[in-house]
Image 1 (cartoon, helix red, strand yellow):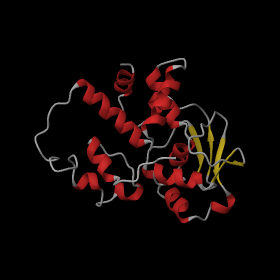
Image 2 (cartoon, one colour):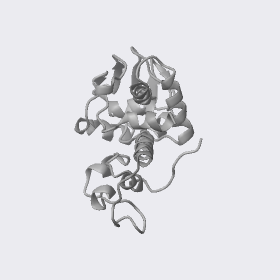
Image 3 (spheres, one colour):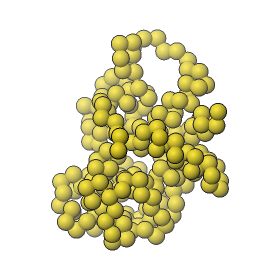
Length: 209
């Protein structure tokens, strides 16, 4: 499957937002966005222009895509699925993205970033209801138990991420047992559960054209 392999900090600078794409580095003085809080490229420090309505919609869509580590085809698929569900399309979209297994593992503190939990998922380090699931896009449901495999509980990346998980906002829709590296999905994520600054209506307006 295709994936972005370019410079990661460049994405935060392009979207003018801290997307926390590199785990520990984003919380340190080495954070690329904090060191250079302007767009990348030769003219990044030039005069800022007021973006058009389309420009604002595009940037918001790109920001959310990059936050969850998705490419355009997959993200668009989530949007059209959300549009067919009952309720508000923008909120449905964020709920679907939050329910991805790689995102749930990140919210539980079983990895330091989306890229890391995606890789750990592909390598089969996580169980859902006692069965190994190696599909990052797997959507969890209410009542599902997500945990780290017994053989993977000494993996350095996982243990380090779990020890530092308190510095991020705790997901209210997940009951996390940090000591046993296990979590239970107690509810579907609501709009209020998404702590990131996202204007999902701009994304809906972009795709509705």
